[in-house]
Image (cartoon, rainbow, N blue to C red; front, side):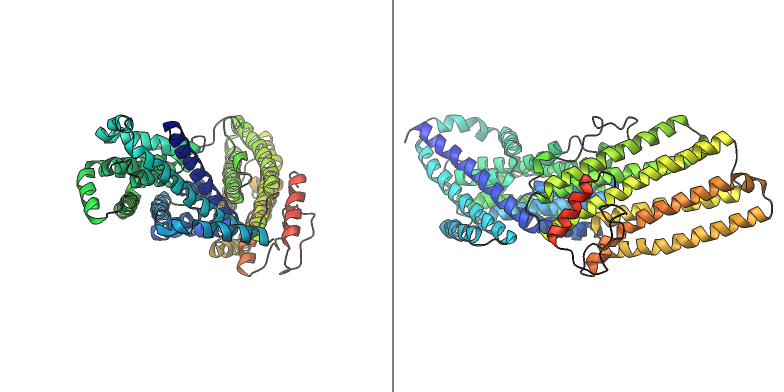
Length: 585
């Protein structure tokens, strides 16, 4: 066999390995995407849960990078503690190494059986999940075949006269070998593929153990570089978890390099099979990282916050060019990632809605024209981004979606419509009242302004709770949010009584500002009603039903279904389509 044929076979095997890994990842994502997002929501509840969630999701997706991208849906607005996010990635990295170990074991001899079962399952059933499981089995079969192809072709390289000359620079410079492996892993976006590739070459005798282990160190560090480059245009809060994970991986790689010689000797004594030597070292490395860094995630989070500084306010010019969209068209055919992208974009809109609410009350006090302009500009951005979210989700719904994914699309659209209405109330009502208040030269009484401020802060707190509920679907948060509806009514009623009492006693400031005061209260009540209605999907899901929210994705004019009435997948998709075509509702 000529050198060209050997290299072609190895390159073809590597290409098949990448494609097979993609098939497995895509099939798992399409079959279990909704369950994966629910699993990730547990990462909000502490570091141990975060490690477990990272392991579980990565064992399914077989990609720590995909887990990182899904986790980003929980990071804007500090909804996921950074320490929990870093712990989640430690679990994801360990699970990714465990996947490599499992794939490199002797089950590769079952490749024909995996292919047979996968093709039969994919062709013989019309059930979406069963077809995707068939896709996974086909991908596994092709993955094992690719490893066999690489191993067979690599055997011929053992007698090559030129190979030692090519590998000699790397063998003598482990740091250079690490850098080469890191760049290769970043280029192919898969540490699973590169580590399996190195293990295959080691099994064929092409790579000596010390060089193979140095390459594994580089591959492990390079895997952390992938999500960092994919999130360069994101907000600082979104970039912190990937950057923190990269720092931990690089620290582990450098520490591993310092002890590479003794570790190589021990592995050589304990394990005879070269392939298992390589993958066992990879698993041991990530286990050590998880054990060492899990207690230190709080300290690591503090370091990352100092390295990646959060902006205090949105940029002065909130244009699409200055704030790149999270709606990545490249993942529109991957429902789990696409829905996560839409969720991240939705959280950006929610952050802007909160800024609008805060700034609107500052304008009552300062009359700042720049603040007026900024709030109006933010409202334009909210309108622009919510329209983009709706149209993006329309494209997502053209995939085969299970009922959970369909429902989640509808929830995102519904929340988008609510926030769009909040922005409109602030822009068209509260800002106009602020202008009128300043132009007329009237003043609120100290007691009246204190009451308005209390209602205003309560609305902001409820908005923050609604965002948390939207992301995590946490039932306790949803119940707390619904309880706030009644509490807010009591506050509003008490404020109205106190205002009327001031009018009866002839308080001049209250008499002068009464119309504006009552209009502001009315607007805050409307905003709060929109905000607390975000609790409905989580509460309905906890009762086993579907969407009974009176404020549906299609707008206020759409008649709600009767309580507890089931909604078919087709009907859910139709509602999402109607909402997206209907603009802001």
